Image (tube, rainbow, N blue to C red; front, side):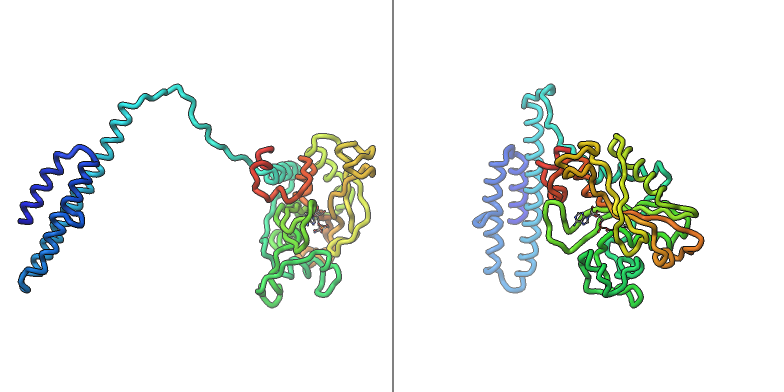
Length: 343
Ligand code: FA5
């Protein structure tokens, strides 16, 4: 009886030419009231000792037929697709769908330009961890515990200790910790820049964010003075903005430099005459810098009697804003295509 049903069904299956016919046959055989389903239900009337064999055979038949139906279904689907491809009209000259092509984020663009200019001047590009220890972020940089200078940079602390010597883990508040890491690793002389992301626990507004990018610079050698710093920065900014830029140094305070400086550059819009952008001063505030403090050189294992050097740190994010005239820092991390497609 079962063999007959299988044979008959396979025979009918072979003659089927459409998915609708296939579905009808499937209902007739495997559906709730289908022939095979009825056969399976008949198990209740079979004597005890024959039940096992009856059930096994019926399930085997069910499996065979299900596979045959699946196989036929894929054949019919493929045939339908092929006939669609051969019968439908194709216009090969019709314009295609233009693929969306992404592009480089303005922050990365400017970062690469900065890296290129400094590489051309013989600087190497360094990297360091974003999750730092208190030691590298503060103590090593001559900012002891409880020193009021720690309040200058509000910090995100992690609930975990690096180790006894290095203290708690923090999200680095500046790229300066990599100064010490690089001195420890390579010793002096050194000529490096360190671009990277930094984090501060502060209220955001149009010019402040909690996550932003900085570029640190450091040059250590014999007989190094601030005139080298001024020369390098002037050259860097002139190449970056492709117009002559002047640099001005003012006294400033950072615990890891002595003397410390604030660096300004001549306003790009008015060239120093005074305008709305520079608030009529002719200058734009750019960054902190100074001669590296001897305690910092020592922390990095460099002998301050033999070597000296300078370091600087500027906000890359703010430089990008100046470069493209972006008036809100938060747009840069917004991932908003209306903003990003403008670059
Ligand atoms: C520092 O972070 C020092 N490490 C810089 C330095 C390095 C000084 C080496 C001396 C020697 P400061 O906190 O001023 O300094 O930050 C440097 C720059 O980061 C600022 O000039 C500014 O451009 C940028 N910056 C600071 N806070 C924010 C913020 N919340 N959002 C965006 N940019 C910021």
